Length: 385
Image (cartoon, rainbow, N blue to C red; front, top):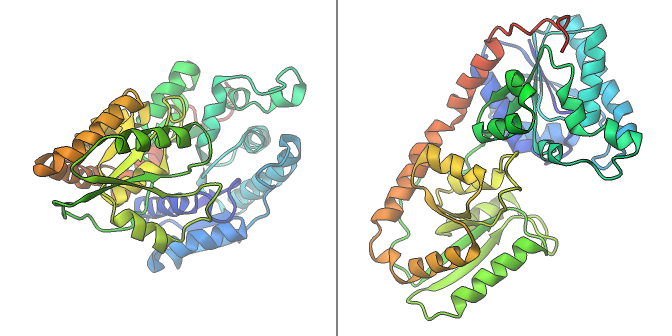
């Protein structure tokens, strides 16, 4: 029996990623009973994304979780109850694996304290964007509570018997640089993703307008200004083809797109643009990059560990730049020259399609099986860190 618990997310947040992860777990252990603990809205979103044959196999347990912006001390009370419920269920029903699909400091501290008294089965914890907080002290760090709940302090101790799953080898490498003693406890899979469309070999072809999609969140701020600078720079030039820039995602000015609206916008674009700084995705994965893989769009991005990792893994899937001046010049080149010969574009599409097989759910399922079945010499919680 495998218990899967989402202690943090409500409604649609990470629902598709968690659905994809559950599919991978089921592929890895098709004969295992799976029990899913989640907030009702999140549970419904996950079930909506699961294929019928898997949905019917999942036993569901609705849990109450603290609000996302709750004070850590208040959240600790709710997380303590969630963790206690999952551990008690594991003990009563003799579950042999527990997977937490996300984590924050209060929930991780709850796990570690309760495992002192009731170690429970093998435990696997997916660590998301909270990892980005380990690089610097929290605000008001001189007070007890912020320092106590700083994730770096929470994750660095009492790790015997725990396995932390991160979504990318580059994340593992960067975490180890910051906290070398975590190396024995880190496991890697690529971000689980439900691809929206089958791979397409259709080329953009000769056209008068080239469409560049910006996937992801775009609020007023540095990235929004960078995109505006690129647009202005491109429009100041006389080009053979016209550039059209399309935002596909969330912003402070627009309501969230439906899946149908998202797909319709993405399908007609030619390239995907990303303006993340190197610091933004040094310790976290990006679902928006996988949107480009899903709709088979070559990537135009600033150079970061995240993009370098997938360019190395998948080959020529677009272009990386050190700054927006270089990026603007390449976009102008695309408008004037690149579509006279589609060979490079065709190669990029081919590499994305082939690369998707390397990070498919079947591939992730195999890695999860190896991770969860690997005998860990540190599995006894009595050998304390």
